[in-house]
Structures are given as C-alpha cells and as structure tokens.
Length: 130
Length: 118
Image (cartoon, rainbow over all chains, first blue to last red; front, side, top):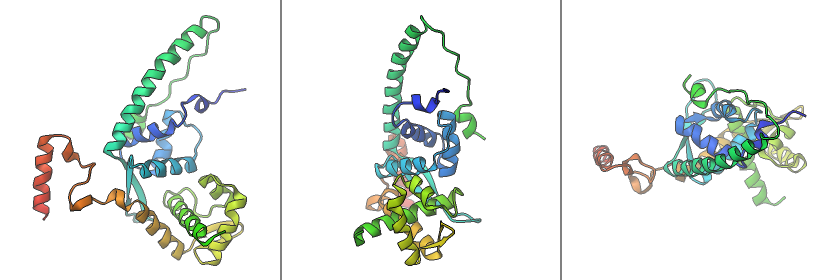
C-alpha cells in the first residue's frame, strides 16, 4: 500500500504552512491552494483551506480585504498580522525541536532497514516567486 | 431548525459560496460538495439549502445551487462585516499590527504620515 506523505505531517500543520506562505507574500485563496502543495499537501482541499483561513482570521493571525476584480466577484486577499508572525515563529521552533527527535528515530530504524530516499520537491519560494 | 440557527447557517453558506465563486472553485456546487466544503453532513445542510432557495438567496437547478444577486450581495456583505473589526484601524489611528511598532524610526515616520493625513 503506498504511503500518503500528508499523513506523516504534524497535526494542524496546515496552519503554520499558511502563515509561512502569507509571510512570503499576501495571497488569494486559490493561490494558497496551489502553493501549499509544495509543503506536502498534494491533494487539493479547498474546504479545509477555507476553514483554516477563517479560523486564522478569527484568531487575528491573518486578515483579509476585498480586492476588486474586473472580470468577476471581488476576491479576499489575505495577509499575515504581527500576531501571526509571532505564532509562525513559535510553530517553527516547535517543528525544529521535533525534527531532532524524528532524525534520531529514522537514524536508529535504518540500522535495521534502509528506507528509500525521499524525492526532492520544489520549494514554496520557487513557486511564490513566479 | 430555529430562526437564529437558520440565520447563522445562511450567512455561513452564502459567505462560503461567495468565496468559492470568487476563487473560481465552484460556481454551482451540489449540496454534497458544499457540505464537504463546510465539513457538515449533507443531510443536515440539504434542508437549509432548499429553504435559502425558497427565500431567494439561491437558485436550485439539477441538484446544484447558485447564488442569486440577492445571495451575492448578502454573502459579500456578511463576510466583510464578520471581519470588519480586524481590518479597520482602531481609535482612528494605527492598529496594533501597524509596522510603526517595529522601531523608533518607523514609529516617527508613521506619526508623520498620520499627521499629514489629518
């Protein structure tokens, strides 16, 4: 049975990922949906993204404003707040701490069984800087 | 369903449908798609959608729902109202996220900008 990379991601990993993407650039929902794939969310889940953005906005970690459109309905453009940047930094510290434990686990497991090397994927910055 | 519950659900549904439409994700979602989007059971959401169609906020066609002009207007307005406090500067000046809190130089520049604006 093939493994799902998203299943190995930390719980609520979408939140720091969205904060990181918005730290890089303010963005619309659809843009975030595309860019978040570079962080391990390979399947598209617009509902999950929408609910996560609403929760982040209610917690004042992001804010959004209407951006007028010539071709259709106005869209919300999201940006990170100061509180969001602080939350992002706390999350990054927690992820860094967890990374050591995971590296130790993998190193000890691979004394018994070699694991396939993960394939390299594009970074968010490459996607964002288009 | 109580009237208050119906009002809350109506706002949430119209906001979500407006967002989906604006992002180009779905113009005419089916009840099941909308239920998945909002993470609610389709059998709970279905009767609400039928009611909102009867009230003129949605058009129902072939099991799919589309916002009417009335639904578009309320969806957009209620979305903005819900987060208005987060986007509006407080006390008529800068808000707590203003970059002016980063350094004394930036604070001075912000103060000058605000003085010019008044």
